[in-house]
Image: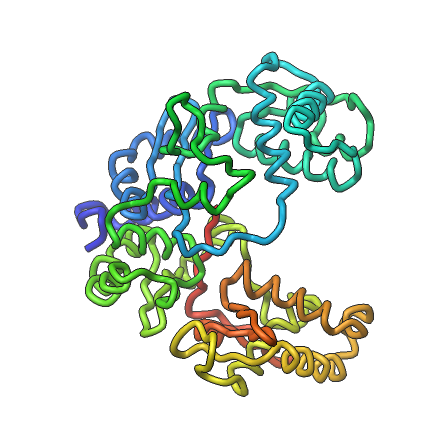
Length: 411
């Protein structure tokens, strides 16, 4: 029995799976663009609220807007290193839009965002990288329906003109839905911690579901795989006692299947219902040369090598089943691979440490299949879930996979 209760017909239940997955991965539906989906969500809003609540989400349904608020990430979440210029310019633009008219030129929006940057003493260089970050933030606001392109495209900003011929509409009421919910504030109504100055502290103070099961299920729909070594004591207890029943019911409510092993769990999409358009922004590299460039092909080959030759356990190992090796060993193995694959990028074949770092970016932040532990020498630890992927011989066709590790997003 799924969370839908079993009283609906099979076709209607499958429609609800699709709606739940769309809402979880997109999060914003706006009138004029998503009218058909908004109408379907409105008809099934009570059931969809229950399904999304099981993974810690809040569903808001308005006449021309559907918004899904995701729960705060777990305290164990690894923050990306360094500054995020895209994030900075996104929030600067959001702060500037409130005072702009409904119809506004792209140059006015850019000038207002730069004025907001000057107020916080952020250097404005108008470099290509800065323009790209500003344009990316504008594109995200267009995707959310906060901005609407009436004439032209926001990417025109990259041409370097001060006032490109682009006209935008600002939906001011939707700005209220950009901010996260339940952020702790001080006596003056301001955020208690500046997210720019202390992002880890700001995230730590966000409200999270009190129920361990909801927290784990939220991770299961957001991550490729939930590793037991990342969970707290109450979450581990729930994983042990209830994931096979309660977790499986939540998975079925999204049309997914539960896979549960000692080292963790994952929600998997059955091959017959796989839809790459609604399962999040991260797509794991293809399994043949034709669908993977140098870095992704090297990442897949490294999975094979680490799975076969890596060491189990040891100082700094994330948990049972993980296989690891020193970074120097990884670089050496990549060098051996580069010698066998002449079609790889010449620049990367001649700069193996750089290739290793590029491979790390594929396996660590995106797929969450790799953990790097620092020390006298960095150790690379591969998740047991990594064995799900392998490289196929060039002449062998790629068969249908029994399932795909789910990755959200957003998300």
